Structures are given as C-alpha cells and as structure tokens.
Amino acid sequence: MAKAKSAAKAAPAPKAGAPKAAVKKTAAKKTAASKVAPAPKKTVAKAAENEELVFTRPAALADRATHYCPGCHHGIAHRMVAELLDEMDLAGRTVAASAIGCSVFLYNYIKVDTVESPHGRAPAVATGIKRARGDKFVFTYQGDGDLASIGMAEIMHAANRGERITVVFVNNTVYGMTGGQMAPTTLIGQKTTTCPGGRCKDREGAPIRMAEIIAQLGGTAFCARGSLDSVKNIRQAKKYMRQAFEAQTKGLGFGFVELLSGCPTNWRLSPVAANKRITDEMIPYFPLGVYKELEGDATCGSLIAPGTAAGGAGEGK
Amino acid sequence: MSRIVVTEERCKGCLLCTTVCPVSIIRQSERINQQGYKVAEVGADDMGKCTGCTSCATICPDMAIEVWRTKKSKKAA
Image (cartoon, rainbow over the protein chains, first blue to last red):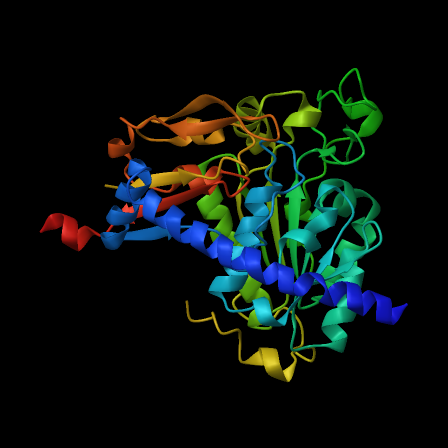
C-alpha cells in the first residue's frame, strides 16, 4: 500500500514541474500587463511612499472573519484587547479564560492560549491559571448572561480575594447566543423573548449594575465602566481597559472593566439604532466612569508572583 | 492625502462607519459581497476629503477598514 502511494505521489511530481514553469511565465506576463492595465492601483502604490498606515489589524488579532452579527460590538472589544496585548507586550505570556456566550469562540480570534471555561466559571478557571503560573498574564472575557447571572458567585469571590486577573465584561443586556432571553442586566421595560411584555421591576427586579458591585469588594484594584457606542467612548473604554490590565501587571489586585455594547439582532434594531439605544437608554442607567482605582496593593501582597511584581513591559507607556 | 481601504469581504454592511465620519464621505455601495452584505465605500471623488481621523476604523466591529495617512512633514513642505 505504502509503496503504491509513494509511487503515485512520485509520479505526478515531474509533471508538476512543467506547469510550474508555465505558471511562472504567465505570472511574469501578468506583472508586465498590470503595469499598464489597472491604473487606480498604480496610483495607490505610488502614493504609499510618503504615506503611513495609521490603523490596521493588531498582530494579536487573527486575520479572519468573525461569526458575529453585523454591528455587534464584540469585534471592537476583541480588537481593543488585542491592541493592548500588543502595546503592553503581553501577547507572548497571556492565557485567556473565555466564557460561554457569543464570545465563546474567542480562541479563534485572539492569538493567545485560551482555556474554555464552564458557563460563568471563567474567574475560577483564571484563578487556577494565575495561581499555578504567576508569571502569566491572565484575563477573562465574559458576557452579562455569563458573568452577572450564573457566574455571579465566581466573579464576586474572585474580586473579593483580589486575584491578579483582569475581567473584560461585555454588557449587552440580553443573552445573545441563545436567542435574546432576559438577562440580569436587561433594562426595565425592555422586551425579550422571556419577558415579551417588557421587564417588570416587581416581577424580575431591577437590572444589576456590576461595576458598582465589584468596586465595593476588597480585592478590586481597578473597576470602571466604558461604552462602545461612539468613537469617543471607545477610546475612553480602551484607556479603562489598559488600567485594568495594569492593575494585574503591577500586581495590585483584581481588574474589572465593563463595556456597554449593542446586540442589534436581539434588540430587533438596526446597528445604527442599536448604538443610539446605548446612548439614550443604557448610559443613563449604567453611568460611565471609574468606580475604583487603587494606587497601592488591594491585598496583603502575598499573591504577587516574582515575575509580575516588576510589572509588564508596557508599564511605562 | 489620507485614504481608507475597505476590505469588502469582511464588511458586514452595518454602516456604523457612515455615522461617525466627520466629513460624511462613507456611504453604502450597491456592490454585494460574498456574504450578501452591501458593503461600505468611499466614492472616488470623495477620497480627497478624507482626514485620516481613524474614526471609521475605530468603530468598525469587523476590522474591515485600514487607514492611511500622509506624513505631515512632507505635506507641509
């Protein structure tokens, strides 16, 4: 069998040699032809001499199409994480704990080692990773259905213990992946598939404000809420995220950043209208800003790993 | 002259970029990409107005926009 296979493999090889040469020739012809034919491309190449690329894909973000719906803000949040990993030179020593939800395929998009956690348990998984490998940068990326409902115990206790991990919390007020059910963060009056008449405060309670809760816990070193609805807010949110990352690289304690984001599909809105809803309805209920920022250590300091105590490479930036 | 490059196969036609452009030159084209979305584009006449502010690329959820900016020192000279 093996012989036959190798023979079969060997046979086409000399044949392949001939077409290759032919391909080369045509390629040469093509380049010669392209000098004349596509005029607009030529001008582009010429202009590139004194041009600089000011915005492109960060190296830590995989070059592939995402599975997210049009207008979904996960793509922006992924890009911000990847940019910061690059800027702070952390990508080589990062382990992520991804959660359940639309962001479940995080490992396909951000080029770092990722552990897929059970629903809501990403902070617990991240705790294990960080305690075993203190020199690694560990972050979790969770949605509101994951973090604020089934994962409430894990996030509260991880924050209270002051684990040196960073949590990126994407709040879009619904369970996106499973079809738009009501989440703990669903706004009063918002219609979802499980509260078709709109969320009622008497029946389902008020939406949970996670950033405020996490800021009250002892081990939290940095806690903030940003939004992804406008360019200004996106740039501000990236600054918050950087501070949350630095809380870990400096060994101060738990870093938490909440990002208000849109879910056009489950809100039954167009992407542009969904962004407007964040501005008009979500931001008044979930105020943006820094809720906690510690200069010193959030705990007794015994958890600082020797590698991280000196801070990340990007600390000075 | 600054300019943007739209990777049309990545564009999902959400049009968030059209809402943030300070000079309003990004629009929806009539071209449909392989996934069936009408992609964003900048008309050939309008590209000269691009300021290279990167707002469109910042709000693009799909990394479909690259921004090129002319170096200032050479432009000033």
